[in-house]
Length: 146
Length: 484
View 1 (cartoon, each protein chain N blue to C red):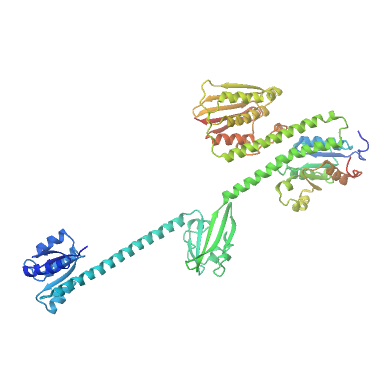
View 2: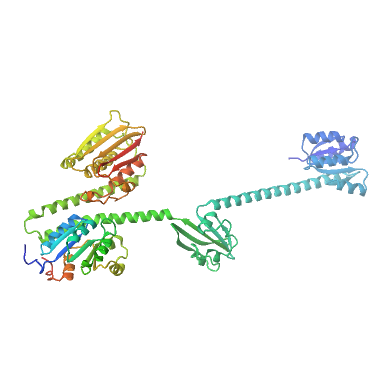
């Protein structure tokens, strides 16, 4: 593994998404940078996994079993004392899919769901990396990536 | 046509003289020497004028006159008498005689009297015609009015008319319902207070007699969506008579638009998801996250390949749906599809993929099948989807059976599997575009949720039906039934 890629510290990330390809790709990308990557394909799998694990950052997709599964899951995670301070990032294609003013409601939703960030899908791995580093600290990616 | 004149007199001299004078003038003349003969002639033909002597051998002239008045009111009458005095004249006139001719009279007196009578008759006939025409037009008007009234009353669109004073002068039943008013309740009320606070309140400003600007807006009433227009109506000279409001229920149009929007939204999601996955694969490879050995990325490339195939299928399915929608009625096949041939083709298409999962496909066709009423292409599309589902949602080492029989209804083709089945609660949603069961067992099964929507439409537009039976964990049975 390329040592230059590895970030300082061994942070654990949890990706929750119903697309297995997306999960695998993120796992490959972030593992290459020294992160420990956990993945869950849905709400139940995520809750099951969180019984044992305490990731440092959680990225959750909005639309899974239902159109708002991500919100419900985020609320449930937040209710647990253990995850009060864990950064929670929501990925959704809602704003660009519906064209409605989801962005305007962002602050209200963030407040309601205690989410730390919203990212519109499709999202690049480098954009995700920037968000992860912003939340967890770590060296900036060199300009232009690798 | 010459006027017809009846002369009634018992003096042969007068009778022939009068007859001669009138005939010379071009009139058509009949004569009678007594009342009885006059009655006979009157019952046989029609006359314009009757000249009657006051004194007749059988009846007196006045009795004959009264009888003519009653039986032939169209005949103008003239009384001839030698006893010319004012009393007789007045009496005869009271009896309804039109002209009085005293004896002795000159030919000019006679012709003058006949001329006067014919003039009266012409006037009377014209007046009668006018009266008849007037009555007919009144009848027509009344029937038109009642037709218009029942027409407006039975319109499904709401109609409300307001006069220049702002009073409601017409509100049909549909409008009363839209406004939640009892029948006849709105009539005569001022439009402002009548509509205030209701669904048509925005129309009030447009109904202001001082403000002739037309208004168009949409209003919501519970589930109902109304399209409302308010505009003036004018007489032929362009003077404002009042204003009229129409409200059309556009709920179904609205529902269709919402469904279309929902479809598009889902479609965008379905198109974007594989693109996102492909993009993340490209990123991983460009990043060389798994190192420089290309072999490490093979499983990613396989996934990319699957997603590209999936996108291709999605596009084909969208085209099928659009084609079915566009064509509307089923095409009449040139030749009916040969069911055994199509079943064979479809099974061959899936045989390898089924074998890869150790799923066997059995075919069971009755020897004498009724002809299939849909084109071969449609049957192929339909069976490809059903057999594909039976393979994809099967368990390993399961089986698929395709059976075709003649049933009471017609041709019945059943596709059965030993797969994961369908949750009973989801059965009604099968055939809904993009609907897919989200269960642990369906994860990893490729599909876009359009297959059954296509099957359902193909079957239904051919007048057939789709019947589904399923029990979770045991398997499903899809039957398509085409009437013969």
